[in-house]
Amino acid sequence: MQPNEVIEVLNRPISQELLARDVTRLSYLAKDGTPRDVPIAFTWNGSHIVMCTTNNAPELPWPPSRTGS
Image (cartoon, rainbow, N blue to C red; front, side, top):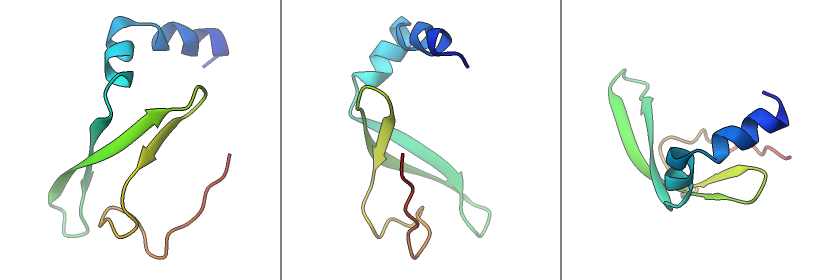
């Protein structure tokens, strides 16, 4: 996406509604194939959506990897 397209999407009413929330749901399939749905905190820092959870959350790999921006 081009920057102007990202801005257009973020300015939509539904995007604004979602960004005003502080908790969302992360859904994934566990190793045994069963679906999981966990609450996860997030925030918008002006350029990235930052998702936060506990260090020992089952949806995270262990040991955790670090990603930088």
